[in-house]
Length: 240
Length: 240
DNA sequence: CAGTGGTCTAGACCACAAT
DNA sequence: TTGTGGTCTAGACCACTGT
Image (cartoon, rainbow over all chains, first blue to last red; front, side, top):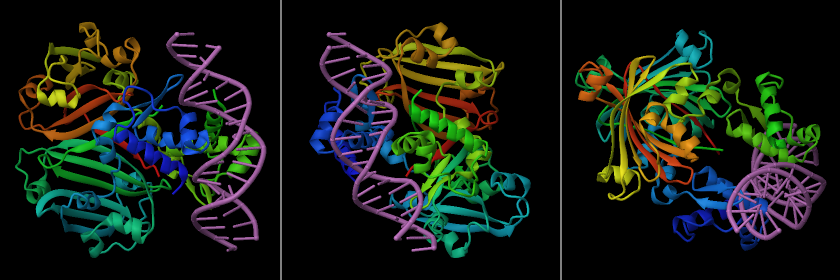
């Protein structure tokens, strides 16, 4: 482990254990550099980490201060990592995820799908619909398109476990980011049939384009959730 | 303007103008340092900016590459700055926002509100409900709580223009970040009366805690939107 | 003015990946 | 082995703030 990460971790623990007063600045960069026997640039990089994670903020001419809510709530630490896939997300909570495959085809994309995946209409895509259960209860219908030439080796076994794991571990691709739209909808036939919605139950739909770290889109999907079982959360840490 | 920002801007423009091939790495850090007559650390900091904005990614042992979707779409640049308030957001689009004040009181918070704002139940808060119109059409009901001692000087004039502007320009406070939950709901009486929802129209509710850069919560709010007029968007750029 | 963080340098060595 | 980015140093000077 590199030095600035070690220092960053030590300081993070001190903050969490309230070893620094919340109303005063933490020790200045020069004294921290002396304490840890390193250059000031290294301290700066260690503190940069904590600023980016929303634990510290700097005031020029004054010092570096602790972000108050960061010590109390764990919100930031909990929610910073999203988009790791439903399976991973819930497995961490000890929940069991199972899947029923409603559709699994390879086809040419229509214009909308081709546009969102930045491919042309002659590049085949997988179209996948899965009903996903958490602890045996219907939880979400995922309707996903992926370029078949990019995300290779999809089969029923993969669909029953985790596509994300297949992409990262088997294909050794790196996720880059995502663009999401969240909206409320009236339920359609599928929702009523599989999510067991009443006809006047709203549905929360999350539309997502997923990107690799290269910027190439690998996934265009719609996830439809029962309104009483899902809340979309979003953490925003202001940078500047 | 500091040097690394200037360099970062120049390189950003080169990327956008496709002056670098999208399939090869951009020039390495040493040559860029020579080109710009600066040290390698300065180049590194310039490139860091672009990596954080999702325009570049690095591959150890290989080089630094352009994120493909960043050049085509403007998604990232458009949506990185949210949480600037509805007024600012829509004014940029040339839309006219007006407000009707449904409630404006000072009171002691109930437990839920006090918890979310990290205050005790004896600290007075403003309770504000505004129906906001865009181009004369009902758009959202905002139900907001703010600590009265922190966000001072709220009056009807402020409520009719922009609370965010009051906080940043008049009170000279800096926004830090936010934590949001988005859910689909059935409409309540207020929604039906003011948003003119049908009884079976879903409503998209955004619950938000807003923080100053100090980490102090300054706002706890619920925004209820017509399902046919609002989509919540979220951009995620993976860091690591 | 003194004290803080912000930037910048010119080099050194390390870690990783392809050849 | 070579070439890439990643880390780190020891110092310099700048920019901002309150006294």
